[in-house]
Image (cartoon, rainbow, N blue to C red; front, side, top):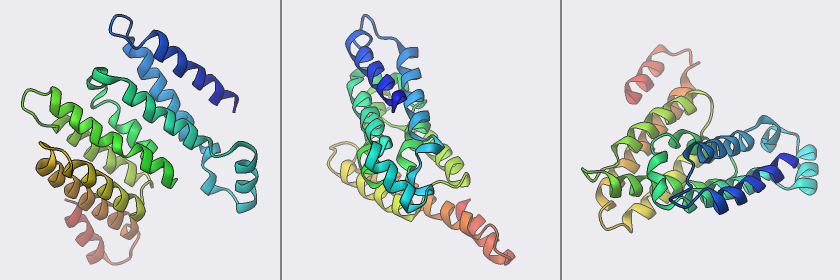
Length: 213
């Protein structure tokens, strides 16, 4: 709780002093995002790993601090305005870590950041594409799922939210939809592969490997 209060102080100072064009400090903002993500993903805050009694006790006393810091990360991202392009693709991995935390409200609040990143790179790139974001998300998703994160509910929500945002966009509706379905299908294959990795059937393992490839 003390750390959370400190991080909230940092957000106030960053917004007030280090956000406008003349005083923008890339390293400070970068440090802030990494600190906030490290806090949110810290093992002592992963409530689903505790017994129901311990979970209820923590929520009653402190609430789910992951949501509080996650909403703050979301707001700080949108505050960046044109500075966002300086954080793509480097912030894709950290934001992915946040969205993978199995808390439904947190996921709903932070997954749309991915669409904002796509839109931002598309607007600022010479070739009007979002290849850097695309490559980074696919690479990091592979690593995170292999590390044990991600689930079927995440796949469904990611596809639903990204498709909703892409379909409303004049220029990203087609390429965004293709990318979203690609990521959703990759995620499905990675989850299948992770599940069956310890299967005794060599044929099943090979079939999953081929699907991922």
